[in-house]
Length: 630
Image (tube, rainbow, N blue to C red):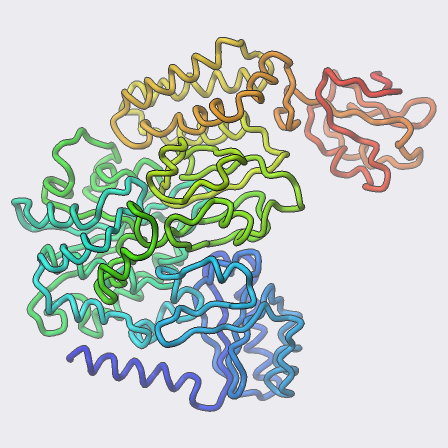
């Protein structure tokens, strides 16, 4: 079947959704939505529609990425704009069905805003202030189409880029990608067009195409959302690259912890084959290409390209010495084009709209958009897609809504566990490959974790380093032993056993580990420690010289006290929850904490009624007026 016929059928299906005179209810059911109760909302809509005898169509979509507003429900009704409702619970469903679907009351008090789009403009919500700062290219379909219905993707322009590419020469495809300025979105930022051209010239067949969907960074979920919400975009990008290489086989390497992404990928692959867009004789061109989903066991090191390919081959996930690069000798020692999920998803946009369109977005050396998973102590957690060159301040304060609870911003960890922590005076830094690297962080795969005044930067560095120590494959001595030694020093500092010379030792060790490690994990593992030492040195000095944790986080450097004047005589909440029986009652009936028995669990602080505020957390060296020790 010709592509024009495939698209005609898809458009007819798409247009029928909202032209049959019945309401359409879109409900996000990606993993984050489900965690917020989206499936219960779907079930309640089904029950209420049946109970009230209302005819409507329910479509389960992916995630828009507005995690703090989930579950999201978008209702389209004839003669009304599409209205997006937020934080929908099963209890709200009868109100929406009866009020809006039956009685024409749009229930705007429950709405987040109206959804606008069309004519090539990605759907957006103009009532949200963040909309003016975002540019959704990779997330344009997320939360709006049914990821398990290929007709939705095709009707909105999907696979048009593939049809166009199949009429181009392979070298023209590579040149168009070069012209776009696209750099790899997996973290390294190598020019994608140059990488493709080099792989095309490499000797040896067959050539393979591999998608790295092994997203293992703490707090990162960009790739997962794209795979769950718009999997066909990734497949289309892979097919285009495969055609340029005349590759017969591709692999999507993802983790077993992403069951919904795997399920929707497999469904997408099956539907693409049914339409003749994947598999044998694609669109009657004689070109054949197949894709297999490969599930890894969750090892963080398998996000490294050579370790990933060893894993597909059934070997242990170890990085290898390079050269040769994977474009010359990769999977089964054959030329291999390996890119990240977001890189492949960018390819259809470039081929469809042209390299010049893509290169006009972003900064001088970083083109296109950046997708970040905004997490941590920020009001609006979720996915953000902005033009490269947008400042951290715009992302955190304008799109993210600022630090949660009105607290003071302290720092932001960018680039995953191997990224860097940047302080407040770097908020005007541009989000692009070069600016972030110069600041001591890195683009990484797109994780961004915001920290406030209650975060201890020594503890934050310890947390991220502990992750990389556990995930090190152990092949390199510097990474295996060096990071463990750095972690040991950090633990000493956090427990009050640190020495002044430890700070310089950490810097020296960190630089040696970066120089002596084989892969990106070891070369970047010291970054959280080095950047916190560089920008938050006073916190290290407080831990080492004053034996106190300014943020009151490090357990060995804090103590809990009860202020006698604030302790309500008849309340025994703290005594009940204390697991070590460290809290006793003074003859005058206020409570006292025995510091020798206290294990510093913090239970007493959590249960002390807010109106009393009798339990306080301080450094052990602090003095509390009127405090009775025992």
